[in-house]
Every structure is written in C-alpha cells, then in structure tokens.
Length: 133
Image (tube, rainbow, N blue to C red; front, top):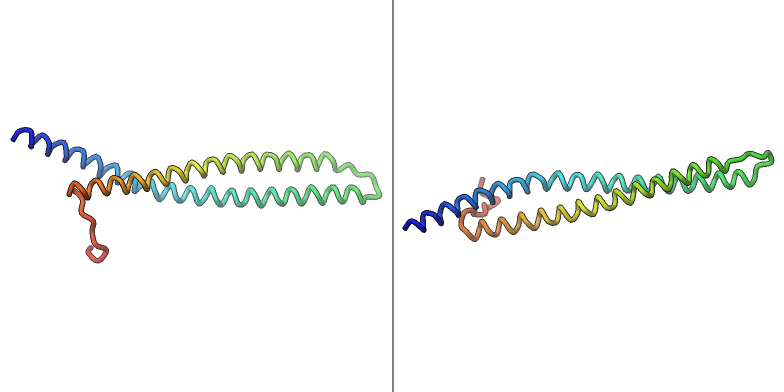
C-alpha cells in the first residue's frame, strides 16, 4: 500500500512538471513564430537592398564610362560594393538564426505533442472538445 502512495506522489509530481513544461512550451511557441516571421521579413529586405546596391554600382560604372569630364567614381563604387558585402554577411547571419529558430520551433512542437500524448495516456489530461467551453 505504501508503494502505491509513493507511486501516486511521483506521478502527481511529474505530471505537475509536465503541465508546467507544456505551459512554458505553449508560451514560447508564439514568440518563436513571431520572431521567425520578423527574421524572414528582414532577410527579404536585405536581398532587396543588395539588389539596389548592385544596380546602383552598375549605373555608376556606366555613368563613369560615358562621362566626357573625368570624374572618379571608383571610390564610390568600392564603397557600394563594400556595403553590399556587409549586407550579404548580415543576410547570412540572419539565415543561420532563422534556421535555428525553425529547428527550435519544430522541437517545441514535437515536445508539446509528446508531452500531451504522455499526459493523455496517463489519464491526467483529457483533451477538450472544441464545442465544450
């Protein structure tokens, strides 16, 4: 009889931890998804910025070739290309961060599903019907 009481206490303690963990996972998931959307948006704008820099550098080179007056635009083209290089570097960093966020989001979803299945199997958690309040 004592061992049964000890087992019940262990189940109640671990189920309480599972409920807390599930709550934390549910709390983090929307934040991770929102951050992922923001990173994606920034990456898109970085690609657009890189394209504008490329177009501007090309246009400056074309203007420089067709000028009758000697105007040295090379330093400006080099600055643009340096800025483009930095944009590409930031884009790579954002891409890596977004991939980590995607993996984290996937792991959160997987862990939530695993814990919910565990709780349902133990009878501690019963899924509610959407029609019931």
